[in-house]
Image (spheres, rainbow over the protein chains, first blue to last red):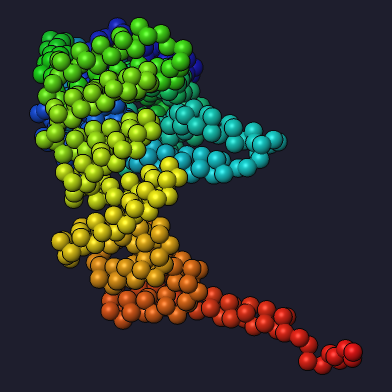
Amino acid sequence: MNPFSLLKTAIATLIGNKATLYPYALLFFLYMIALEVLYFIPLEPLRAFFGPIVEKLFGEIFMHYPYNMNLIPKLFQYAQIVIFVFFGAFLIPTSMQLVVQINNEDEYSLKKAFGVAARNYVYILIALIILVACLLWKIELLNLIVERASRIRSTTGMFAVIKSVILQGASYWNILMDVFVQSLFVMILPIVIVFKRKIFTAVFVNIKLLFKYWWIVFIIALIPSFLYLPVLILRNVSAFTDVFPEITPLLLAISAFLSVIIDAVIYTSITILCLLKKDLR
Amino acid sequence: MKKSLIFLYGLLVLLFIGASLYGMNSEYAGEKRLWHLTRQYGTIVKNHKGTPKASYDALLARFENFIRRHPDLKATSVAYIMRARLFTIQEEHIAAVNEINRGYARFKDNEPIAIQFLLELAQMYAIQENSQGVNSTYEKIITDYPLTKYGIQGPLILAKYFVQKRDAAKAKSAYLKAIDHYKNLIKTHPDSGVEFQARVLLGESYNSLEDWEKALKIYSETLLKFANLEFWNRSSFLHITQSINTFAILRMGQFDRAIEIYQSFLDKYPEHPFTADLTRMIGKIQQMKLDHQKQLELKAAESAPAVNQPTATP
């Protein structure tokens, strides 16, 4: 099984059957609503409600331009996590179920797909909570590594190289670690949706399958993630945000769009993998 | 589903446009426009000698335009200040002062902004080496806004300004005036935050006049009277104890005096959260005292003539 042809098939499925993209479009819409709310917090009527909270938690300065732009990425990250876990647990399985319906050459029905997603909501929610918990733990781990690396005093030799690789490439390591963590859990969702397994069985089956298909799953998760690199490079160039702070929410919108596209490609590819590999059943 | 999505995204765009239009004249929108103008000011400051006059005039006009369009925003006060600074850079000091006065007249009812204008004015007079102007501006702050941060600190800031100017006579006179001012504040605002601040600043004034005894007395009284945590955090508490140590030990060589002050505090407030710090400090001072005594004995032994050495016969 070639991961590249799986990715190709997934992209063709998504483009050829627009309905599979609707749930992801809805997910992106929710991200954008959150971003819009965060962007307009310093203005009335949102200011009246969110202003005191922001002032208390982060300081009064973050209700003023351009300091509020520095706070938006942090708050948007929290909002994205909440939306991804609670709404993604419903929308991603909906899209997966649509892929299953298309594969079975049935007339696809959004209503049916919603029904399947609703029935498995709790299982997928648990799976996504585990995934997000691991991703958050990974951020802590990376911060520890970066902090330790920043304490390296050597200016030449092996340690200096290690320091430079870790510090300058922290964002890229972050993506690679994200891909690694996601690969560990990504098959749980199709196992629940396609094979109708309960969550604990799905976790167990996932572990078993990982031994067999690790590299396929890892490459499927890795290749679409490259889409994220240009945004990462732009976000690391502070010159843009220094001159036009409004670039920050724009970059956040683009990165949210790309993360939805990446998720769509990954989850569709994995669903197709599950459908093609009979031994998975 | 397609129609629903089009509707939802349409709603998103409409909300964005609606909120942007609604907030067009808000304080936040003003801050945003002003930030971009202030960046242009920053570019001019970086290369003020190489900037042509036309660029100054264009930016001055933009700030003026902002003032005209948003007369009621708080952010507009910054536009007045920026215009004044642009005049100062071009060494048009009278225009700069006029601009500040114009802004002050507009915002004199808004205490924090009015003080900001006066501080800016004092700064401008300082640049012009106009001590009289600095003095009168701070006098205005002290008189008109006596209980604000700068109103309270004003007399001491003024004294420090004269120290910086190396005008010893005026500095001394300003310190003496500050002392009278703080004594008066202590009398008129007993048992309040104002008294606490006035006491700390009074101690600082005595310190500057090298009157260690009075500085030590006022700090120790303050420590014993204002033990409540609303007046202190750990660092400010340690700062005042370090000042007490400096006055008592370094300046006056009285180790026991510092120990006495801290012991009185511990006796009066045995449950205070900083008791551990003070107990540790007493231990350290006692150790320092012993070391100091040993050093004195050693020095005395070294300087005394040896007893068994035969005296030279004439």
